[in-house]
Image (tube, rainbow over all chains, first blue to last red; front, side, top):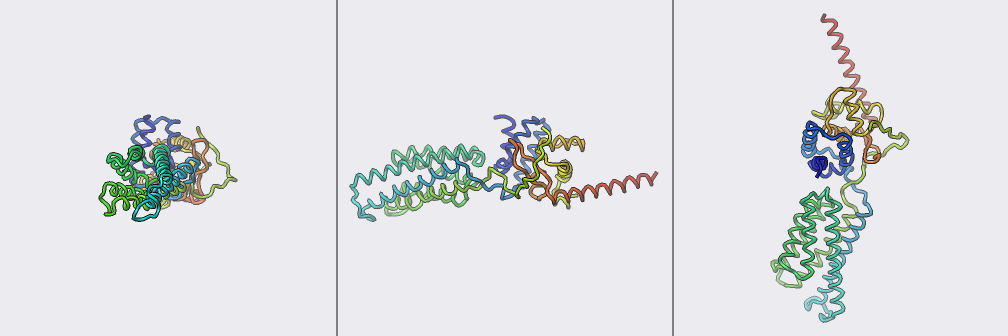
Length: 254
Length: 106
């Protein structure tokens, strides 16, 4: 990691989103002296203690990558919900469908598999695209949660559940910088309930309760995550007041 | 000076330099830094520069223009121009008074 990158990482994510590019450009144009590095350190502490960001400056304009990520999240949530719905209908207590209907079962598990693969894509996409906001810890948590789905494909292994829950819960505080905090909290809660249900700590209805929680919380939580990723919270552009285009900016200096 | 700049604390002096630099037209960070050094003789560190820019922007004294490549120019707002004028007139009056007293004291 270059000194410039290291110095920039000292600043809060919102500050880097707003000023990071031009600040990096400045440091490239004029490599910082030792005195400058101390000044940057002081500036980073100031930025953390006295954030001066205008809230409008961190409103996002979704890019094509955001839209793809958002769509993957929504479809993943829909697939999880479809999977859960089919399983619930197949339940002797809740449904009238023939539990032995192999075609529907195949559709259900197929939907679940597609959902998992899309969820993995969303988590890895988050880690890659939003690494600045998530930070190294958040990106690592997203990757751990993504890997957990591969364990889940072969069944509800304890390792997979711990990885998934731990990863999503650890990701939630960082994710709250990318999407609405309630969406991040909802995903963490739904995942925790899912894990508790699968481990037998929630409810007395056994599998039925587990699938209800899966369908009632986990799928919609992913749909909401996708919708939030479409709208987001952070900015790639400057909001602020409208720019008077009649006054052409006069570049000065280097 | 701090009052006019909206209680900007230790960034009052760098902020005045930045406003004065932008007085002649929009500039991006590197240009402001080198210009401030030229007009004031004082080194403006990158951390101080952007801490002051963020404060000035938040207080509506400067505004950012569309980026040019990876550099973003800033310019004075109407409020920034008025504030700069008031500050400089105050400093000018202060300097004249100080010089006159120095002459009278001889």
